[in-house]
Length: 193
Image 1: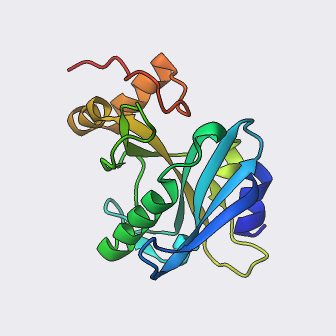
Image 2: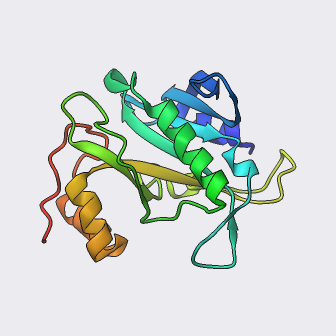
């Protein structure tokens, strides 16, 4: 299955797309907004074509071909998400490094008016079935798998916790406290200092 079919199968139809930066320059990848997918009331912004760039991993000798995604409530979907994805993707290409599980990027400012969430935590897209996280090589002639990386909005205190305690402890706390990770106005996780 090609990337677009894989994305639209779970995330819904592509409703909008961006191929230029707000300053007008063409981008080396696109950003698409999908809606009406398997998660009711959720719109997802996703890079399309970032995976064509081989990004080295900082922790192994492997290279990563990845696309990045941000999922938000449909009623709050008119936000800065396309530009944020463009900036993060451009930084990865410029720095020649992949975004790995547990990485934190930002801060970018509040994700929505009144939101305390301002950075992103890189994770696997656990809100979909196991087969969604990776697009296998296939009919489109691609010889490499594509990894889908979910960028979860987090607060400053959560970002600090990841820095101090690591991603494994953070994910354990998320699992215990089970917050609504799509809620851009959710309270901070209650975390040890």
